[in-house]
Length: 467
Image 1 (tube, rainbow, N blue to C red):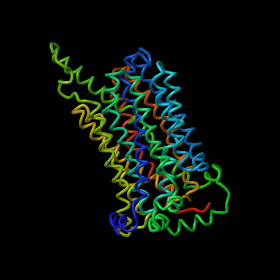
Image 2: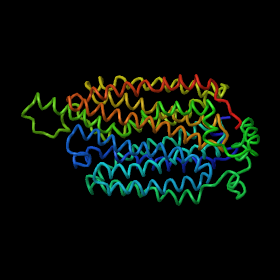
Image 3: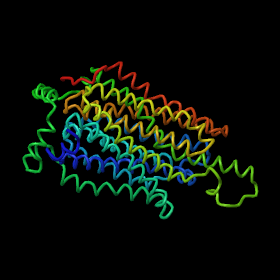
Image 4: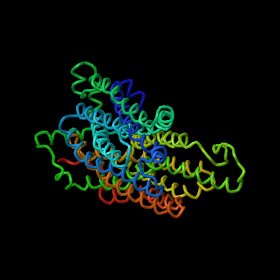
């Protein structure tokens, strides 16, 4: 039975829920992206100091403030959401990060920015545990990767909207208003969330969900048996979850691959503006009498447009990432093999970013293309690695395990942020910052295949466990 016929026969209310999660994730990444896009403006304004090399290190410190808070927030957000429920947990998280995003407008030096980034990190941590829990509640296994891919594409849509709006808001009204206006968007979402979201059982009771769709959502026999076995048991502690190899497999996968996304999120605009600056310098050295607009120099690109292109391609990757294992399963492949095979395929594509620095010297758009492929592969990978949690754990533990993995990813993000700051400070001082980026691209390109091997060694099969 194909996607369209299933919706026609059982209903499609679950996709309305998916749309709400998609919107929240879009807002989450819109707010998260503003800092990276305004880095050149903030640096020029002296927010990160006056020395160019020191600015790189101070900027990485601000990023690390977010990552540390995000790591701590992830650890507690999952437990909080498992305790209070998806509806309340998601709402409180979004309220918190909207206020934190607006607060950036009142930060004018490294440590005040660090404070607001930390506030944003701890509150934004609630998005993915809540989203993953909602998908586990509203979708059967065969549709979870696709639903996850759809809502996770919101990370790209937020990252597309940001470069198309934020630089222009900052140019017209000042950088403070870029934080205020983007932060205020989240409050609109709350009205839709409170009016539309409830559990499948509550929706069935109110008559807004058909019995056929309710039964389809709960059609995984092995999962229902595992849930029944868990009904009379106590809530699961972190320590208990950490005794399972399945938890450590998810931990390892997120620790290895999340930092790659963080790196591109926070340093892609800086990398592209640096590529432009080098091409301008080279052209001016060869044409000392040139007085035209720098944007007209061969090789100089519109970096906000390039960032939007990268995340547009990533949106396709996110959706394709959910579609591919679903197609494998519909073709008769075991769900475990489908997930593993899809993740292996997606782990290969980021290797293209190993060529980014070298290709960038030829044409910046070639570097953009390799980064776009890597980011699309990351989103495809993410759609599946998030789904492995609901494949392996009962619903009552999904948010907690997602939080543990998210914490691991944030810790990895801290390490790559500090490494980026130190490397780029060093090579900026040597006037060879492109070498620093080249080293970082090697780390990013090889992370996924390494993560896949580790996960496979820890969990050869994504089999549901009974807690």
